[in-house]
Length: 622
Image (cartoon, rainbow, N blue to C red; front, top):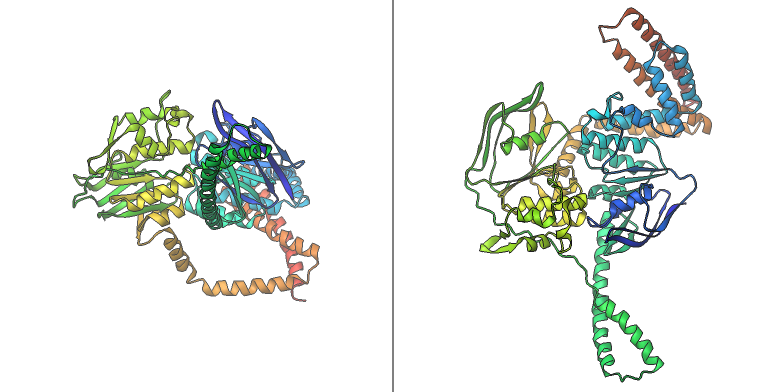
């Protein structure tokens, strides 16, 4: 089923043409990734699909009544709203019913309102959706629905926007870098969720494992042309390589033909026949094909790294806390030459604080951090480049000098260095504030590396960088002879770059794991599954048996049976929520009575649902 068709769209900003005459389609159940270099208009295309922008020419034709949700890189909410306000700001009928039910739970004194809301949940079969709704909020760590958006971090706001997009249950979900600001656990959950859910997706993401496991189609914008690959990331890489090789062969043939036709053109007299005029017209096409050239210049990163001495960095019984939150607890470690360490852990466990202590911008509460005399840090922070008004790209590099030293006593001009970082002559005179997010990150990376560090610290370096730049950065880091620390949620990047991990587990605990991220996940799964192996086998057997017995129920009974399980689980969560309110010692007797009435209604509802569940379960035995 065709959902929407993009026909010959073009977009320019001033004299800069982002793209022209692009056409493609999105069908039901497609999970499409859109791949292109930074600055080629990926975000503009997403904005056009979502209706947030319009093309200069061409059109987007949509199926009648098509519902589209858009997750942008920079979500915009009313900062005085709460999480609840943002989530329920939707036209979805089921969300309206759930909103009424959630409000009824917060006003236990009004039993009539609760009973009505409860009945509406039943009538519209909203229990399973409510359970899904709560699971999404829980997985994205958005537990306090009354929290104001003004008090949330940028990462929390991005997670709220993702939750809003998922819960709105659209026909098409358009996503701009959905894994940014998610920790590794959340990314894996979202990956699994998209793999199983019946979503139609169109996304831009640099997360190559995500591309591999979620997407069934990749559309690439390469040198102004669209190429479609019906497969995942591995298939795309394989087919793209084959396409480029074929193009090179065809260009070679065109060059040989061009030489031959050029000789013929030079021999022709002024008076030409109709036949020769046709050949002359063909000549211009041959010339165009013969002079086609791919601009696949690679970033050349030659840095003049100073030699590291024998003493690098030593942590001796280092402790750090913020109020009651322990970051490090008597942490000990001695860094060795050439170490390549990845840092992982949930948000808030102290990864960035550790880096700030390492670079002496935050002091430990106790213990010593000794840094060797020869160590020169290069610190790529999440904050990125400081954009100054009216500052041009070339000016950023000239702040470090007109000429930049390279290896073996050589030097290059600021202009030449920028060309090596894929900023052509025209782009060098653009204002920094006009660059795309990925281009700004590439420029920032340039400023870090040209200072010739021998101890490189990268805090989320992959956010907003395109896949082409990531591959080049990875190749550079593999050859980097100094020490390297990487904090990243990009699992593919971590697997390729690091040798071992610091796993921040919270409460000051840091595990030194000898392997990359995939090794660690495999280790975690093997450890967690050992004591449960018998249970898993038993559970699998029971599930198969249940499936066979379920066939004895009618279709409507099977549906009711499944819905009852969702309703009971949801009611149990509501029951637990009210029971927790009794822990408040300041509750008045009237409030206790009100809560008790509300709790009794939920208990009665659970018992009623359970009785019906057992009635249906008895049919399993027949």
